[in-house]
Length: 144
Image (tube, rainbow, N blue to C red; front, top):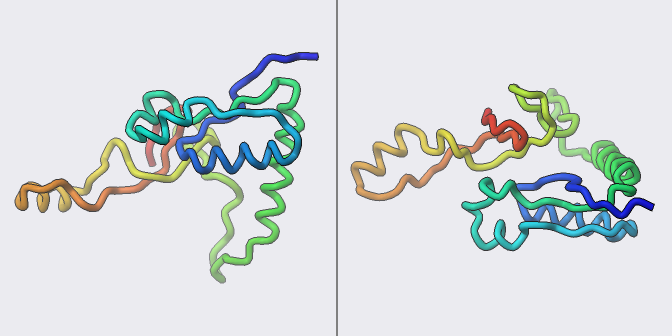
């Protein structure tokens, strides 16, 4: 038996990481999260440490892939919240630059504030209030 552990996936949202971890533990897989505490206590360090890492045994990777793929297909089949005339998304949005599916949606890091929010904050001597959101590729760092 192979008892090596591998980083199965990386999450920049600790809640999402805990949901996947709980799903795997409920199915009988041994796993744990690395860097969860740093990510939760200091969210600004999240990108520097590479996010919350889900660690699993190497021997379980194929079974976990199958389990999570089944969960994903069931979720897509049962979702009825699509608006007529719009197509449902088929899984995560791939990165425009590298094609990776390891993409999340959240606060922008590159162009965080719009020009108007920056000007308003400068005139009122405050910090900008409204931040931009975008997709972020965790593999190549591209924002779109």
